[in-house]
Length: 536
Image (tube, rainbow, N blue to C red):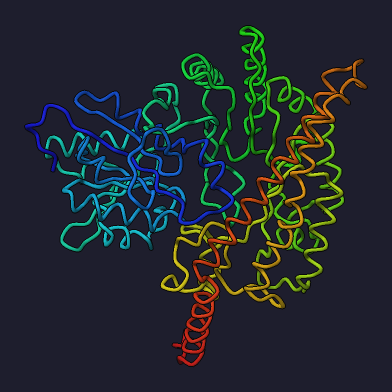
């Protein structure tokens, strides 16, 4: 329990570092996670509580470090002792680091709380408590965390707090679910000044929670709940005025849900920028078929939304049919070109080698898959790409399906730290092997992101004067030049990222762990097949 004699208490929320250098490493250094900031802001309004957020991925300004270059939590705890430490479990790949920090702070006598999508699966809850977590927040945290802290402060029964799990005398107790938040206007605007030692250039903004797509591989479910456009404009304007923010990422899983409210938001944001004579830059995630809504696209462009991230899943017609997607690769190329025509920078997100559902029969060689990916990316003119392997995340139907098929590699061989989309985590469909699956992604990404683009960057700089040919439309000339310069820069940075990932990959000896994982999985499969089945 918390020392009730203290006049003030401190909550420290930690966003654990990524396990290894990967495609998220660069962007993580210039942004932060929205959820921990929202939770910290809610607690910061409580009387008697001080709050801070430590993002280990964005940790630069005079932050104390260990000799190995990591965040020095020993120093932080001596400098500003925390009574309660919260941990962000939104990314499964960071959970091993989360547990490492949990054990450290438990030794310091702190109360430990964790939350996030990783803990939405009941199967991982015992693991969390075994690793030193005292309380788990199951669901949205802004209201629950305040109830937990007050109960601890007053030595009340935690069983009266909804939306949590904890363990007493070896027994796990889960309280009734906390109602989902629908009135977002009663929540304080996220306060990014609570993130210590960080340098944020890309600010995350949330407008809609939930997603009605119900994808097998995704943990985000439920009816979309939308905050008012007025609230989001207030958030953006506050960041512009207090932190000189210019770049924003709207974290909604699918921008364009609540279509009419989305258009109204875009119009309000356009008017705001005109009023302050400042141009903002926003990025969103959106469905490909929204290309058919010209009014929405125009409103987005006028609002300063310049980049769209689109989940293509696959450019292979057979896979699209197996996923119950009605579009074909040819249709996706046409829709992508509409986005480009409106001036959007298109970031394509793909899942390579997604396993077929039972009853679906088609076989494509790795070489042919690679060829189709490259051809599609070239035809569609996608500006940047992200090709990841399927991740059987905890709490998803996808993991449950593969688990029933006994295809997931044992965690003792391929642990949570590999659940970032860069590593094979299960036995793939024939004729591919796990090694071919991973190598195929490297070939696709390696062809797209290359060292040679550093020379193209220099050429772009020297060719800046070509804009003179567009004097009749300076805006169009700038847009064309900037698109090429930006894409060449990102492709070079992508090459550096892949190079760094390969270095980390070799150092980690993942292929040895993969070999052991395949052996143990095969042993488990053989054992299961030889076990007599009980009669129904």
